Length: 263
Image (tube, rainbow, N blue to C red; front, side):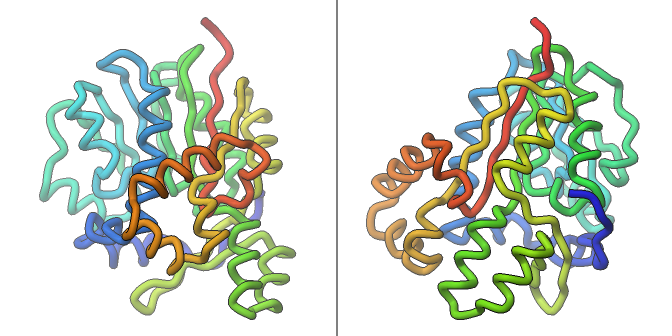
């Protein structure tokens, strides 16, 4: 999982900053957000934490956590995202650390939970960054990361008739996120590689779940139609599918959790 990425994600996230909350109003993003939150909620220590949110963006995860009484340390490098955080302060229990998560200096072994929700895949070396994140967690605390799934993207491209691109992504294990005329490169991971990186970071009780298996099974438009017709039923199906580790790589997103050894 090492190796540089040609195009930084910072310009793209800067461009999205002002409307980033609305970006997640799309049906499939709202659905995996809800599924991810349910799993994160089960990992939360008793308030006040603290919780580290690495790649916190405009505070989408930090705001509800602060609302629940947690102290949150947010790490963010995109200037426009930082500007949004300052324009709409998260609250007195929120501390912002500006800069890349690979360089942020946080107290070792102090956090009750460390999150990297959709940000780890944009770092130069996700495995090395995971080791850094794990070092911020106190003994017994959890680390939770959310990344795009290599296998799900390859299957999506094959279904769309883009077999050459599917094979290229499979070989390179790199993806590209394009939005509003901008592009950012990212690492694509599978369950085995992500679990191995978590273990190499010293984490135990490692689990990897696939979120939105329905996006792979029905296609994005098909999933959106099912969510519109029966949101509760489809989300319940997604929870059942995510509970089976054998289906992890079929999820549009991979959510991995592990704990620092200790009491």
